Length: 132
Image 1 (cartoon, one colour):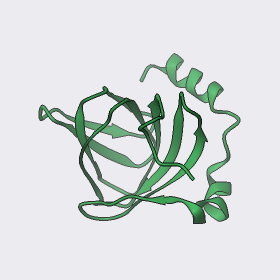
Image 2: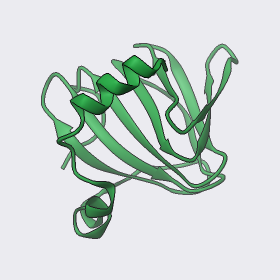
Image 3: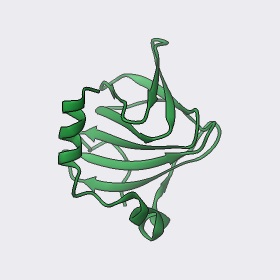
Image 4: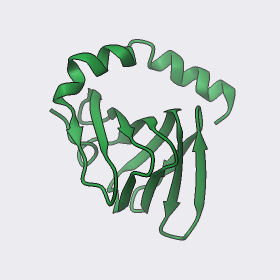
């Protein structure tokens, strides 16, 4: 991700809660996902019909199985390292600050190479991340 894009993302998300604040009280009411192996738990940061933003944790070795989105999704690594595999066999390694777009109708899976925090964004949110 280009630095100007990353700076714009930081500007747009500066009002979001600090990670340490989420982990304490709000994270207890988080969302758990069904995984092939390992764990993935998320916390809704923002939700309306147009946009969903979620922060999630995957432990090292966790594999989010192949799945399909009916909307565009962006995944940004805030701490750790992931591998994204799409339906065409393309493998993309993501490290801190890296992001990837998963297009509407494209299947993909994610594997955590180390304990990893990520930010996920879906547009529109109508069939995106669950929210509470």
